[in-house]
Amino acid sequence: MLHYSKYIHETSTDWVTFVHGAGGSSSIWYKQLRDFKKHFNILLLDLRGHGNSKPNIKDAFDEKYTFDSITEDIIEVLDHEGIEQSHFIGISLGTILIRNLAENHSHRVKSMVMGGAIMKLNFRSQVLMRLGIICKSIVPYLWLYKFFAFIIMPNKNHRESRLLFVREAKKLYQKEFVRWFRLTSEINPLLRFFRAVDIQIPTLYIMGGEDYLFLPTIKKVIKSHMDSTLYVVENCGHVVNVEQPVVFNEQVIQYLNNLNTKR
Image 1: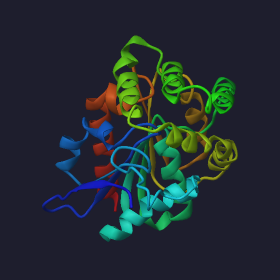
Image 2: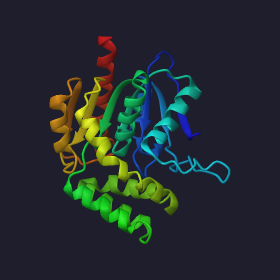
Image 3: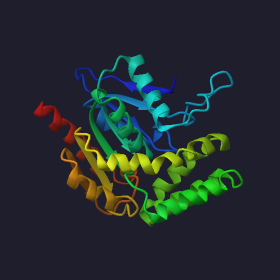
């Protein structure tokens, strides 16, 4: 089972589950924890191979690294804790896992908050992925990761996010990185399906105005997905929760509280 931490609110029955991106860990939410604990029960996860969810010799998460199998890891934790429903907050690749979880287990998802959401890989992104596939077994993974982090977060004000994710990625093994990178073969058809299907679960996309690779697609998606809202954080890149935590926390907590008011 995945490593996780939970924080129980004295009166609230609402759960918020945080899902980090590839190469990160639950520690990337350190700027959210204090504010969100005031309103909700919190579940922080380390995805397989990340943070403290390291496989051991006897139980190595087997070889099935698919979006479905990784999604089921999250469901296993929810079942273990008896959490029937949760709001889900994700960043980057974590948003793909949340959307996939909602497809497979829609009754478990109260809402989705998608930070730095990935809903399409543009031409430049696809070239980077193909380069990574070619080089993943011969080039040290950290070199590739640093390169990708710079392409996705190129500006001076993105530096904190870049350094944070590279620091977390250092905790991965080369073998784990390769396993996760194989998921790229699933991404395009999966994202095409996500764009085409309106899942009709309340969704907040919170994107940096400088998230050049992924923001244009989200602007198109919300026009056809009726229960979706977009909030753009100006002067901010891909990792909105790290670069602009005050704005991120205020907007997301307000969104979730408004949903509760409507119920």
